Amino acid sequence: MPVQESNPVPVRVSEHVWQVPFPTPTLPPLDHTNTYVIATGDDCLLVDLGTTEERHLSWLTQFLRNLGVQRLQIIATHHHVDHTAGLPRLAAQWQVPIHLHPLDHPPARQALGVPPELLQPTPAQLQLAELSVIIRHQPGHTHGHLHVEVPADGVILVGDHLSGAGTVWIGPPDGHMDDYLTALTAIAQSGCSVAGPGHGPTLDARAAALQTKERRLRREAEILSLVSQRPLGIRELRQRIYGDSLPAGVERVARRTLLAHVQRLLDAGKVRAVWQEGRFLYSTEP
Image (cartoon, rainbow, N blue to C red; front, side):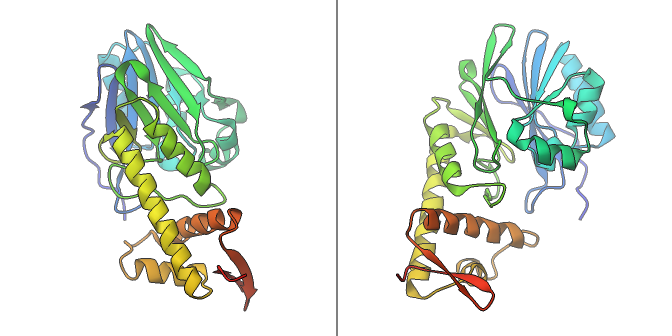
């Protein structure tokens, strides 16, 4: 279903940070992805841009000009196209590179069709006039996922590690559940009070991270309980856990998230994989 166009409505998150939700073709029930503008004086860092709509890009250019921006830098929290599709055109307009963790460069080049030199590694810190911005490599949703912190404002931009609407999916080969749980702990311990997620409104950083981690661990315990009763494959786990409750279009990512949980249990030695009838079943039996 095509994304319905709407006028962007920027939200002032803090003194230096704006959140701008743009319509994007992302996973249902979501239909917007957040772009973040960090600006001070005439310096600006833009984080993520998933729209390719000409009128939205024109609106964004005018928004930046109205803020007095003369120098722009660009960062993507991760390579997924609902966060990056509009970045090549913005980069061309401002004649700047796109900063992205090197682990996410290969899939970004393939998805965006851009030359290798357009994608550059992310620095550990950026200075926007008097404002320091910290960039941390925090894998989980993807291997090169980043968190962007604005300590002076108490804001941490967390990409797809938290969601203000819907839920977060983590799935191999792109994502890793143990890394994701570590990322949630990092958000909770960041000292930032406000988390800017990739989708939906801002969140209480510590509370949202701890609540999300608790949900993931409850899901893991549920999986462990189910496979302790008898060997089950991912399809059976999906049916027993979700039944008919999944929204249309998320079947694949739900299975991948379950697989990420199972992989973590395998790595911990809490379950074992048994090959039966052309597929793996998972069990706690020795």
